[in-house]
Length: 319
Image 1 (cartoon, rainbow, N blue to C red):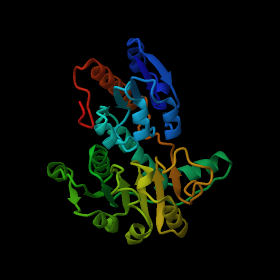
Image 2: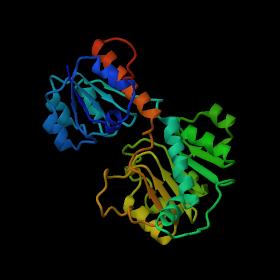
Image 3: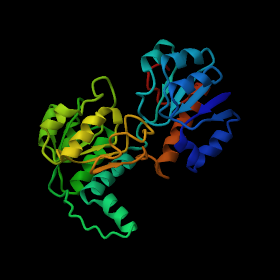
Image 4: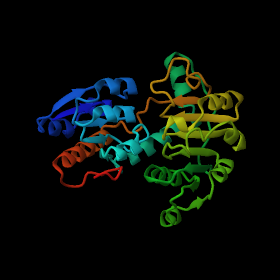
């Protein structure tokens, strides 16, 4: 059995997943992902399984991988880099790991929010260089947090926001009325209702044709002056050039993102030099607690699928 392992978090973080994988007796080929389609195409055809991160798994990659490829096990929950319709057509199961990283990512969203409102990055960097830069920050107490996407991560963000005594409004096509009532979350029927009312907007929706580029110049113009936007979802949800322009003008008071539309970004990416912008390198779920959970789930999914036994969280309905 030959397995392509590409996720760096899995490889770099200690935990029981390493011993369990070694015990399988598989041949493991390790790459440092996320891999572009060109590299995946070069590798395709020689593996029984992929244990992948956010690598570009296109139809061409899938077709070249057959007939040997039996299964794809995704480390994580986002499937937008995998051509899911093609996997269905080619009858290749795709496995995922729901419910393993929502608390960690929610914490990261608040780390970005507090970092921006308290100027932590700017002032700590200045202090390190000998400058005692005493900027004036803002409280988040009493502010309105608008959540786009009230799934597992969005719900954890809402719980933490209520602990900070923030007002919470949200929209989601699959509204959980019981959860909203329990945590005093106001239901907005459209995204625009959230955007126009919120002091802080936190994005927690999947990347799809409908959400790609949905935060752009027109939507930003409808928001409150000085709004803070947090993105721990996908970089492609936000139009980077429009966000950089809004930060430069002051329309957006701060942008905190753990994701970009190009990862890793080129040196001239517009958000890397934008004011009041904090970018982290897609580490929201990369903790010593979360990584082993995700790694063990993706590995046990793979083991069960290859053995044809047990629960393996098939995400595309092929199994």
